[in-house]
Image 1 (cartoon, helix red, strand yellow):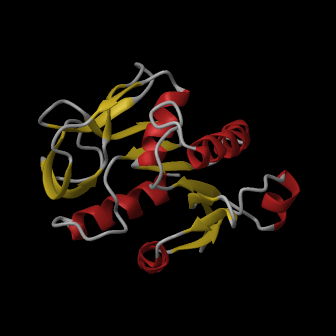
Image 2: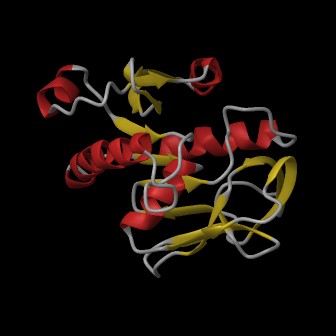
Image 3: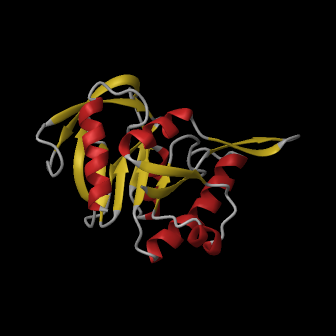
Length: 203
């Protein structure tokens, strides 16, 4: 079973300082797709990662990017996750970006992120453009994001879009990006589980 590091949601309280949290959904889902999750403590150390035998990283959802929402916790998370992204990129190790994680990766590659309209809903249809993983032409997924990625550079392969042309699934080498949350309930859950398992086999 592969060990994947996963970033956590960050909150800040003037009395308690920074606090980190990760939904139980992620631990349930990781067991389902066959990976072992290790929550990231936002204290970067290459020696620590090597000792844990980490084989990939998941940049999870929660929070906004600092340039989109200038809160203290967003600044902290961006700063710390940049270190992590640099490490995994140099090592050419698998990277999976989910929702906010997708936006973070898009921003690193000078993609375009815009405020979303009608994307906070339990069910929406997305269209597979280059069907490398599934036979279906569309999926019904959840959607909780206030911001969408509507442009990525040419080195990215766009796999799925929403009808408003925003990007829902994309990849570049060992980097895979999903705008929806596979760990939460989806109407096309079985297909999404297949998608994640195929991605993990490819990387």
